[in-house]
Amino acid sequence: MSFGQERQDDRAQSDRTEEDERRRALAAIARLQPCFPEVGFSLDEGGDEALSPAQFWAEGGAGIDVALAYQDCFATGMEDKVRAAHLIAFYGNQLALALACLYLGADIVPEVRGLRFDDISRCHGERTVAAKRFHFHLALPGRSPRQRADADVFGEAFAAQLAPVIATLKRRTGLSSGAQWRLAADSLAGAFLEVGRTLGDEANAISKALAIVKRQGTPLYSDKLTYEAIAIGEGQGQPPLSRIYRLRGGCCLYYRTEGGSFCDSCVLLSPGERRERLQAHLLASRAV
Image 1 (cartoon, one colour):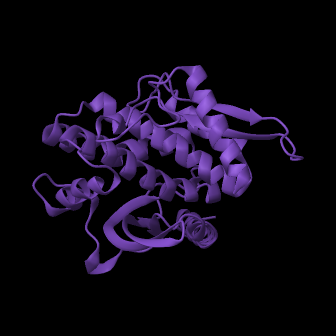
Image 2: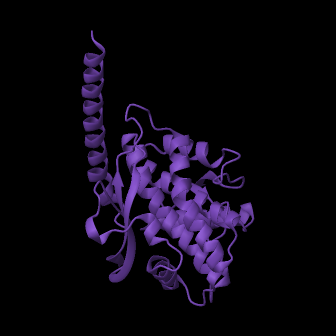
Image 3: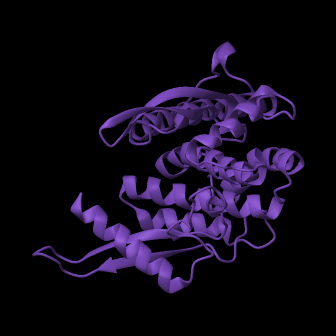
């Protein structure tokens, strides 16, 4: 076989692999996007409506102003550091959900080419409320599609997306990089758990998340972040119930807002109080 023929065969194989990867990505999006309406993601360029992540998060740009201001919808009396904590947790969760749907659902770590901050409507009990969400315009990875995606690839891609955002928020609000990275790791771990639960494979999702957030020497390393199975016994003729929860390694500072308190999985709670709160949450979910 000639050298030219070998290159043609390699090219044909690469084209077939890329086509297969695209089909898997589109299938994962079709299956999982309806399960997570709080975030948008699609395999396209986004057109003129989308900005590159660098443009959206540019210091002094409209994107970061709008995103920070939106955090006031979640609490009253936010100061800049609290807004920054909420924003990195909010954005990190939505970014992690979008990427994890393709990583866990199709073994692909996509690239983010475009970004929008869209107005949406969400149901809150019996009411419909106005809200916003990020929409990520994704592309297949530039690496060879024959290279298998793994936890290191995902962690590096996720961290690369967040690094400039965290640097800008630190300069803008004074919230430390360490505090923001812990919140980002919490967001990743929570998103993996949600997507894994939807796919019916929590164990795999947790294993992959821990491979990222427990890798020392990376910005996403978090020593206190963990998962715990919470259980409640039989009650009113109902069987025992258990659920895995992500326990935070960082704090969103919600307790600093007017009427704010600690989240049920907050790292600042004692293990006993956190467990009691999560048991109450689990009990309430059974009543729904």
